[in-house]
Length: 203
Ligand SMILES: C[S@@+](CC[C@H](N)C(=O)[O-])C[C@H]1O[C@@H](n2cnc3c(N)ncnc32)[C@H](O)[C@@H]1O
Image 1 (cartoon, helix red, strand yellow):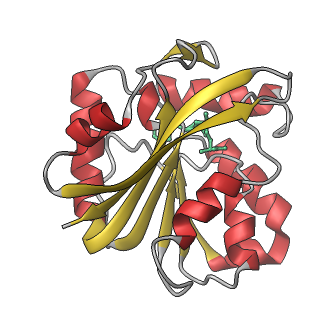
Image 2: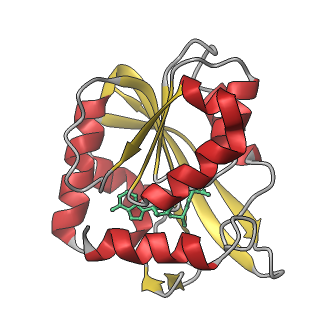
């Protein structure tokens, strides 16, 4: 197992899922952004979904093509256990996004608080290669990363902060920025974290 996978597994082993700084009881912004992409028959992949409640909320909407990818097998196990039998309807992929080779395409790529951990240019290039392969033409990419006034680190790791313009520059001309907005996430400890949200359409 890689050092990175070990690191994230230990994070999920040492804290309850509702204690981590990124915890949200209700993934409101994610659901709103996904709803803007179109109907509920659209396939969704949650990149770095961890133990997020998003997958359960998507299943509650009767979505039947939902994939969750994360480097931490521990996080996926926790998420699956919470869902019980419903978890059988989800495709779970335990892998590092920077080495992953997608075997199919999705309508919607969702990433909340993952891309900003890729502080090495080579890792961002690898992530973007996977994104471009995995999203079908006319499909969507939703990215939520720390905003310029957001934190400099998360969970002990440095992060790269983004404005809508700098995120759009990373994705390149193949992706058209449809909408961007800022959200302040309230952490379980009462802190505030500024996020940049962007909804892109693949041309
Ligand atoms: C801050 S958490 C966000 C979790 C989830 N997206 C949410 O909003 O609750 C970052 C997640 O990204 C995962 N992660 C970090 N680096 C990754 C990588 N290289 N490939 C895949 N997942 C990664 C971590 O295991 C963790 O679950």
